[in-house]
Length: 202
Image (cartoon, rainbow, N blue to C red; front, side, top):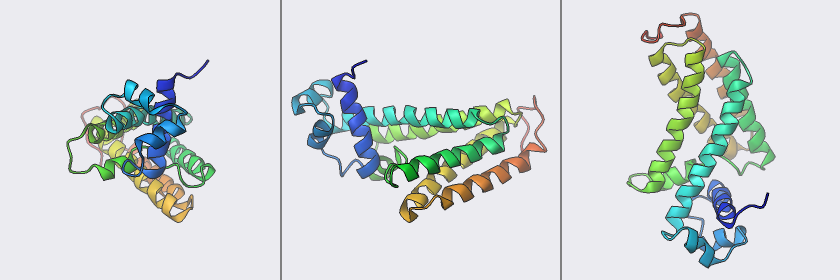
């Protein structure tokens, strides 16, 4: 199946944003990487660079969600599932030569303090990933409040570990974070009772 011009533009923009951030990515470079004309980019995205970036972030968000969902579903035990997520992220990062980190981190940091569509897309991405982890924990019998707070902790920790792994060009930060998150989840599991969705964890 042939990829449409619009899809090529979105995919190219998502890769460039992932590797060099929003500020470092130009509209001409996006067109060049997508093998499209500048006119085509503006045809599909009349709002220019920001609207391309929003579409690219949404594309990357779903890509990462697919990876996260697959890792979470690979293990029945939630602690093992979170370690699988950390391992998968480490593998992907190593295979990319330590350049393909979190698809929203750079754009999010570069637009802090603004009310831009980019910032909103980044916030939506993080919430959607947290929801995937939260759903996994709820299915495993974690109380609702604990599942919500632990999901935030898991995504926040993995995001930070991924940046640290990139800086150090090492899988170790992700491996350590995966092990410690698993340890945290196991400390809750012994007190989790399926059906007690309103109860709090320790």
